[in-house]
Image (cartoon, rainbow, N blue to C red; front, top):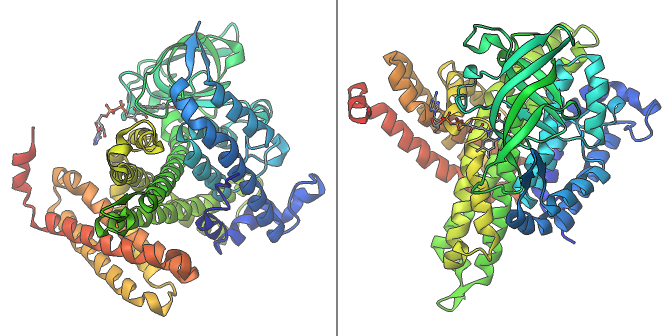
Amino acid sequence: MANFYTDTPELKHHLNHPLMRRIVELKERNFADKDKYDYAPMDFQDAMDSYDRVLEIVGELCGDVIAPNAEGVDHEGPTVANGRVTYASGTQANLEAARKAGLMGMAMPRRFGGLNFPIVPYIMAADIVSRADAGFENLWGLQDCAETLYEFGNEDQHQRFLTRVCQGATMSMDLTEPDAGSDLQSVMLKATFDEKENCWRLNGVKRFITNGDSDIHLVLARSEEGTHDGRGLSMFIYDKRDGGVDVRRIENKMGIKGSPTCELVYKNAKAELCGDRKLGLIKYVMALMNGARLGIAAQSVGLSQAAYNEALAYARDRKQFGKAIIQFPAVYDMLSAMKAKLDASRALLYETARFVDVYKALDDIARERKLSPEERQEQKKYAKLADSFTPLAKGMGSEYANQNTYDCIQIHGGSGFMKDYTCERLYRDARITSIYEGTTQLQTVAAIRYVTNGAYLSQIRAYEAMPCAPAFEGLRTRLKVMADSLEAATARVNELKNQEFQDFVARRLVEMAAFTIMGHLLVLEATADADLFTHSANVYIRYAEAEVGKHADFICKFRPEELENYRK
Ligand SMILES: Cc1cc2nc3c(=O)[nH]c(=O)nc-3n(C[C@H](O)[C@H](O)[C@H](O)COP(=O)(O)OP(=O)(O)OC[C@H]3O[C@@H](n4cnc5c(N)ncnc54)[C@H](O)[C@@H]3O)c2cc1C
């Protein structure tokens, strides 16, 4: 009977952010759909009510169906026979329930059968689903791929594939190969044009593909013979109904056991090009991965929420030395840090989602008409913010999910090590979040340029100028000191002009920016709702300023000659 949306007031708080007015305005284009679809909103409030209603349905489904199925799915897992995957029975029930509730293709336009949801409420659904079962979130969340197909496919492909996604067809993104993991430029799956049949043919192997037996695949393949880098890669659509791809095996994993991770063999599989040749990695897969990274950030936040809930309930219940363990400072220190990291990573998630929403909605409008100069400027501003915030949200959110699930077990003591408690599944499920869709190290590679070119710092200065409640002025002052430390550490790294040193300290620099940004977001959240966020703003900034100080000390004292001690 639990509702995973209504029992977490922080979610509604983020849904009601002031920027939603602009997002809805751009997304609904004068509410033109209201004359064609009886479920389309008539005005801003109507749109917000519809997000709220659908999220309530998601929350109910998660509380009543997906969460209760999670343990069974974790034990049963999927199986493979004759090249085809069978989901665990609980997964099948979850998918059926999600389809029935109309939760597939949520962000797709109504003309394909979607709900035309902005990214914010869609990603909120992902956050809620992940709390219930992070493994299932993968299968449900792969509907993200439809966004890339919508952006880069043609009208005919939209009609044929997107309508199916909205009716419940599942998707996968087939990128990784045995020799191409973080370095996708090395992808070798071969695409050749079949003149006789007027189609492309795919041959080769993909590895670690989530939901690899899905209905519709987006595939990265080498279409330009003789090439060896990203410029020879194109993106293809493979329809399972055409055959030619078999699942050779599914991996026996540590966590997210309900989500089948497949090795795929392509044998002359018929496929069609999506977009233009040679832009597969450079443009399309970059867009695909940015969407998926936001999805993993949501998955991470959902896991952090689940871990916090489990830890809090246990700490209140468990008694030692004659009192509930929550009364011990060592335990409430861990719990408040968990909540602060949860609130901080969630604030970063929805800030990023809003940035993505604005620029994507403007991109979409640009497909229909020329943008005004002001709109073009707005589009550019938010695209840049979205690009710079996405690796932070994914990198930090996933690391916090790992830390929070670890602390959740710690708070459970010996019981946490036992299979009887949910926390051990959460711990196993969280581990992958900092690896797939680009490891934390690769998120750093994506983010460091925004430190060195001052983009994060200028957004931090913009936050400093935003109004905040008098009660939080003191926190603001401390955040300014943190920003000054970031500025000084960045200046040192830029001045030294030593690439190896920069790469070596990159993660510390990126974290300094992330800590400061999340601190600011919590001050803004607390200004809007003091009851919900005052504790976390205080706890997080206390923790973040210690971390920033530590990193600044390391970077400013480190001499590049010392790298000799570290090289292997
Ligand atoms: C459960 C699961 C599901 C997955 N689902 C999918 C999917 O649906 N589709 C898909 O295409 N792929 C999927 N993957 C693949 C996943 O994205 C890759 O495993 C991941 O990107 C890392 O690649 P790799 O495993 O080859 O590690 P490697 O690239 O070999 O990395 C090994 C280590 O080296 C570090 N490293 C590598 N390059 C650098 C660098 N330039 N700078 C600093 N450090 C570096 C990494 O951070 C890591 O610590 C999945 C993987 C798993 C385990």
